[in-house]
Length: 311
Image (cartoon, rainbow, N blue to C red; front, side, top):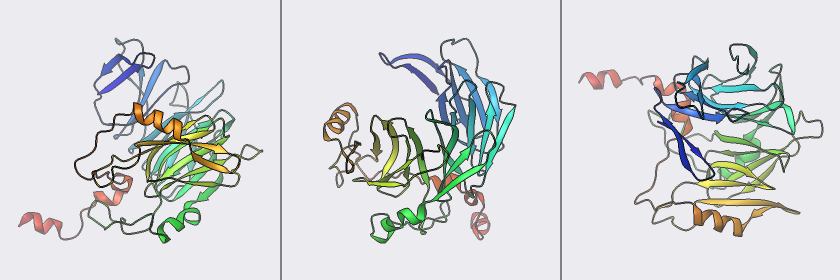
């Protein structure tokens, strides 16, 4: 089900059933419609205020939709990215008019972000270990950030750990860098991102030309973030639920920029912690890797499974 709330008092404005599992959503630039993307590749437009209006199909992919977003400006594009390594830039609301494709990722594209301070570009993160910068109107790839060169030290120090290969996750034992989320920060004039397994946030400032990244900044966090959101002069990250063994530490933490870099804002972190209900988990919470659903190999049956099932 999909629920839309009025944030002033958190009253429920609209509730409706979704025919398929929703993977991504966002509001359109006017806030009149909720845009959703599902695991079957369909993108719907849902009226926020008129409960009588049925969801209407906006566009479709032939693969799982992973993220949706909008560009800035008087004629915004709707941006969609999928498990088949591509970013699609479509006109809005007539999304059957495709402006461009962003092609170059080698794995599923997990997140897309745009910024009002650089309205002609978009930034995507992927399971291929890169963050890429695109020109919106042409789909031109402007810059690629290879995360291995920036984040390998977390594996070498043991702060990031590999798992064990399974049928569902055949690359768990390898050092990999799956981008969980990319956001834009107006006050920092940067894009911020978090990466699976890595106990840090990545800040990518936009250069003066507005079409390239400046020097990247890594901000260590006390645990591995699960998501990130931009705030004035900083960002907030969330963490996995704590267990009895790992109960020390907040569910969220706020980081603010200072003259020498970024540091935890203790006051804001305490305020957020007091307002975030996070019951202690009785046992360790297992969060499935994005590579489980993102890597198409998991759909293939390993040799020997057929014989085992027959037996």
